[in-house]
Length: 270
Image 1 (cartoon, rainbow, N blue to C red):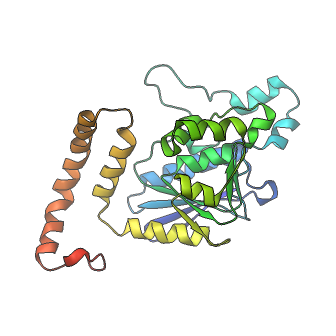
Image 2: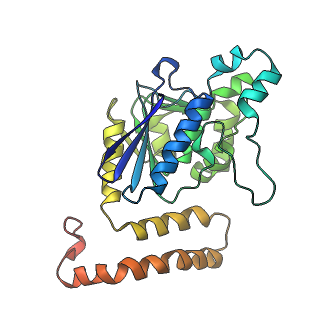
């Protein structure tokens, strides 16, 4: 098994375990990651997931050694890209080449990045809501060397995080992006000591998971859905997403505040 799940209360850690390949992705691993995140999204007791690569690498992208063993283009297309094209209209999306990169979850995911997250591995990290990186971790569109384009959302998500010009420079050169630079340009949210990215990501996950989740998910959904909308249309979406959560949780929360909890911005007792 190349994917397993560690569960701790309402936080799940989804672990990709192909250290011999620096956690490069093959079809079986991609399918297993999709199944793991489908289970996470369905489980009513799960609130936040952490995605982590075991063995010191987040993901070295698609497994090119596996692809090379297929021998020719026909075999490559049959084993790797067949049935991955988008359907017509509103047809459901198949999984991405790297697995869950086309999934639209209702709950947050945090990428815990140790070592390389390059090529498709970078795209997999960009799919997450937040990224925690070890000091010696790095990103890079390393597939630039082999004539392989971004196919898992990298050219869509990266400009939304760092801006178009900077994204294009990173994409077109394929250069290494260190954790320090990633933090500076908004490509990750936290940098921690080597070997501690998983623990730091789990700590962040627990911080998010302790809050009333309907409001967390409503606000997250609005952020994802409001790209490209006018302010007015974005606020319409915000209202539509938030009002149900307000009815479900807001009155009870106001009551707890009225009873004396959370005064002065205290997050300790809510």
